[in-house]
Length: 224
Picture 1 (cartoon, one colour):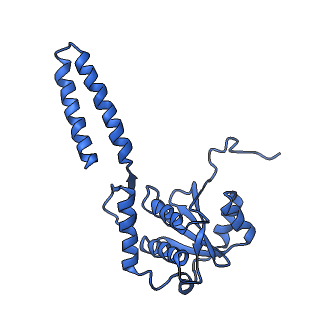
Picture 2 (cartoon, rainbow, N blue to C red):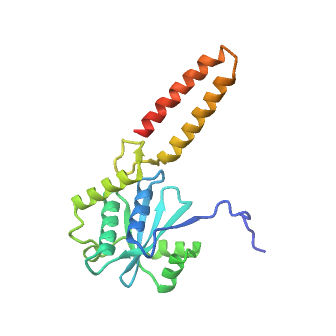
Picture 3 (cartoon, helix red, strand yellow):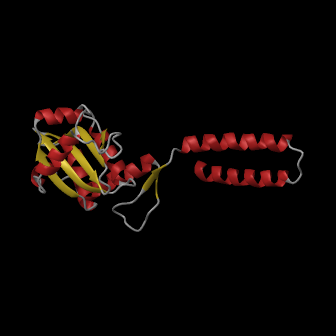
């Protein structure tokens, strides 16, 4: 008889899939979201099949694994190899351990089809090597200036507010949807306006006015 100590799967590894096999930029964006997210990346395995590359990201809390699909390439000058080089440079800068594994086409297909298993994850962890072909994967044109431009563009486009300044390499980031915030603030202000108009409680009215003033100030900050 086999005992199942986790019948509900509460302690299973959470496997997520990001990036795109068709667009290098999606792979870069999703990697950078994870890099500047609340969970610190500890290991990045480059999964290589021919001249295509996927990534497996492992985190400080080991319950999560993220695969970035194989929109990354190498072996020629172009967008795909530039993306691969950029991600490696960013990972190095952040102190992430970088490994590489030559992946079988069947494993590659499972990753790109969002069908990788816990066994696949364990196989990759066991067989990946803490080294990679730097000269093949890192193009010289992806230098410090290139990396900085990419970071600046990402931060600008994503409206990211960094909330932890003590460690520049592993900042927590919160993505703010300014449109949604402004919309909700508008709705709240209108509701409070109606309450103030309809209420006859003289003690409540100054409080509502104070709340409205605060909300208007917040809206001004987010709207700027």
